Image (cartoon, rainbow, N blue to C red; front, top):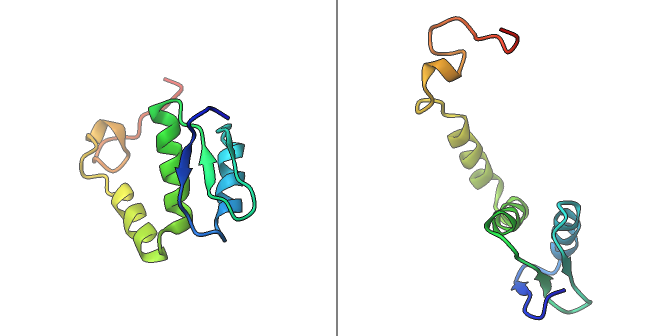
Amino acid sequence: MSINPIVIAVNWQLRWSIYQRLTLLGISCRYAPHQPLEVEVHSPTTALYIWSVVRQLTADRATLVNWLERCWQLQDIPPSLNNWGGGEPTSLNS
């Protein structure tokens, strides 16, 4: 661990799940009984991973469903990049 790790204040019941997921992502973290989770943040990508893991485990179902539905909205994607634009699907082999 670095000298100044970031402390994440999360429900004690979620610490283990967050710790496990961050560890699987290769993010250095630790916690001791009755202590907060400490995480090393070395890059913006690491910070994004931490935010995403914490959000997935702390947000209520309705929030996650709403977020996923917004991700599925393809109105801003040019027709050439999806199969719903009225043209023929592009082949990856051509």
